Image (cartoon, rainbow over the protein chains, first blue to last red):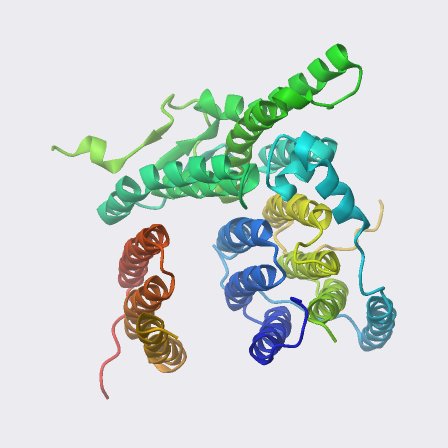
Length: 331
Length: 102
Length: 100
């Protein structure tokens, strides 16, 4: 059985657990914010290893792309904006009595939760049996995709709505919809884009397709595509969000397609989001494809929204989407 | 002590550490980092609880929940960071101040 | 344990000093350029040995091709990011460390 005490596995898991705790402790108490964020990125990567050890490969893919990579990039751009004028990011602890009370309360909470975890029943098979017995009507062969897009499709619908809401929120708060780089992008970065972008699009499509049979799916594919989009944004001299026609369409299309499918199933069969068994696989693929585009567009929007700063010209000064340095050079 | 139990306990400790840092530090970016660490702890507990099956396959429902959770966490982090930058732009500090109502 | 398994495990063990040296260099080297040098050693050669060992241990050629592609992608990304970091450091006038 997988949970038997194999010495090598125990050592590896013990070391990984220790590394996770030490990294979290160091990143939370480090006075230098840049160091804390870099430690957070490595914490995210170690967490991906923990997901693989817990047999959650889909989550490992998503964590490495979104949790470690994208969140780290967001933190670093926010830190750059905050520290542009002063390099010190000082922070202060609250007064001593507050510290003691907070410490005791957190210790009590952790103790109670730990005791609850310790006394959980060792086996819990009901949901797995329920999912496995319903796999033939789900239209896919990967149980996580089946749960995500068929059995609990309503949660995923709302989640895409939450993504859209976050994008709208970031755009409402960002001072300028135009992101301007400090200097022209290096030609090496443009070379990297030329090499990697087709590869990224191919890998994203592959992960989307393979989500039916093996770990993968819309979220991981959307995250990979967003990584390509963010690379593109960092290489652009000027990125004007409000001049783009494709970006708002891509952002909204995931939720739109999902809602259309939901309404269609409601009108034709009487139950919201209950797919007809013969077409469940195709419907899931269509929804996942639209969701991939949507997730990628939203993540790129979030990144550019956090990156844009006040000393950028207002939108409307030019109608181009973004300009590369090489368009001005003679080939 | 099985492997999933170890990770579940690590998750609980991470939740506690993140909560303590959330309360203790006043710098906004530190609070957001602490929230992310707490979130990672909660996800660890969920996935470890999913591994408690008697066969080789884990329970896929918590996996789907955590996948949703990771994506929602990143969008919440992005919104929080945008708000923190806006607060810094408007008020000049990176900490929330106690404003007496006028 | 067949011969290819043994040789593959040996290649995996050979990668350990590269990763260890890369981490040690990150912690102990004096300036950013030398640290980048240590890190990319771990990325290129260390990962290359791990990939070579894994290809030998896994007997299918499809897995081998995928692993090779992964190594090429990491090579490209790590060398280009190393150049970009060093370029940015140069622009901020961080001078290389000289022997005192």
